Amino acid sequence: MTATASRAPRARPRPGRGVSPPGVARPGIGWAVPATLFFVLFALVPLVLVAVLSFTTWSGLGSPRFAGLGNWTKLFHDPVMIKSLWLSLLLTALGVAVQTPLSLLLGVWAAGPQRNRAVLSAVFFVPLLLSATAVSVLWRALLDPNFGVPAQARWLFGDGNLLGSRTGAIGVLVLVSTWQFTPLHALIYQGAARAVPTVLYQAAAIDGAGTVRQFFHVTLPQLRNAIITSVILMVVGGLTTFDTVLILTQGGPGTDTTITAFYMYQKAFKGFDFGAGAAIALLLVLVATLVSLVVVRVSGYDKMAGTKDGLS
Amino acid sequence: MRRTPNYLAGAGVFVWLCLVGLPLYVLLGATVQSRAEYTAGGPLSFPRTFSLSNYTEDFSNGFGRYFLNTVIVTTSVVVIVLLLVPPLAFSIVRHRGRSGPRVFRLFLLGLAIPAQAVIVPMFYVISKAGLYDNLIGVILPTAAFCLPVCALILTGAMRDITDELFEAMAIDGADTRRVFFQLVVPLSKGGISTIVVFSALQAWNGFLFPLVLTQSENTKVLTLGLYNFQTQYGINIPGLLAAVVLSTVPVLLVYLFARRALVQGLMGVGGK
View (spheres, chains in turn orange, yellow):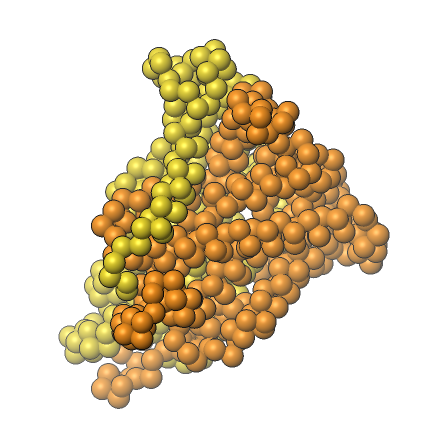
């Protein structure tokens, strides 16, 4: 995706400077073969197979049978499927809207000169270390309607069953992914903010710009590429969230948090309709790619390939 | 960089620190209390007693087995990554010709493939290969999905080796293999430790592949164990949270000792 667009040119081996004898210490492409074969076999072949399987019916036993467009027509008439797509997009959009400003501020702060920065950023990273499973189990325990925090603060949470209502469940999912992933995005911004040339701030300071104006007129424009990278990661990550939903809400209440990735799992591995599962999986990839492309296009990232990489 | 500390930002960061810290405090606090004490006091109360019985109870409930399985999966994934990625990155960086960039683009394409996209065919392939409910069936796809990011990280590190060093080796008459083992590998140690830490973290925290590719108690990994504990334990929250802590302790230890490599690895997720 973007990564391909922005980095492919760098992949070209440096032109020989004319000094080094030709062919010396130049590995053949054979060195790349084992890894490439392994990767093709376990990532690219399945990606092709998912397209093939989406036109079959397969219950997990025996062999898949060709079914034409059956899975696809059924999916487009399936209200749960359509609802799940909107829900995935909604959760992703909410995630981007909440996490981007938060991680921008944290990242830019962490790139600054404060002495306590190292200690604080050490604590920030702990959520990133925990598996999505551990994070979800922890939050579910925290939000338990009988023994959790809401039970102790009924004045704030009503009956305390946050996961029992649509709004509550969606809110919890946004909260938990923010808790888990904000540090990662802050880290991206921290790296990018450190790379902003000091001269720019000095020039801005001479022009009389205060901290806030420096942030909006120097830092933010310089972080543009970092913002786009981070947003795309959030989009792909958001659309493919799975563990969190499985553990926190099981897609409920009803189908109110049945996002597409979870619906695919349900169809394939609970309903033993692997053909439909494959179709949903393919749709998921297409939507994620499409949304990422839109982000790239709208932001003009593709036209900036030649400018300074904000992420070095 | 701004020269004066920004107190407003500092305050905001402090709020965020509480948001991060509070759940972690509850996590540790709850696990050293008895179940009755936790139920009475709630998650935010300070523990009055201290006991590790929640942890020992987890181990008697099969957590040892899950732990061992996770160690097996993680070690194997790291070994595969170590065997495959350094030669791959060496070839991408130093190979003259068109194949190098092409291979690299292939792996960059892989960065965009989510595991969910391939899980149905993966189930098909793994069952046909007779590897369903076998740890090998979890190890292979997990390792494959570590390759793109690891390739990205390590090619970045290997590009920093200067041409002059290669020339010096060439004058010494070193063949490609010697150049690889005596120049490239030692000089990209930083990148290599980053990919080790990164792939270990991925394998340790992996959930989707074990969930759909294994079934029996003997092949369960920690994350799946946690998931099952949650449904089985129901209201034994201290026991459940102790299991969360147990599943995370090795990661935290790695974090303490290899913080640099880990942070670099995670920055790699965001594109170097």
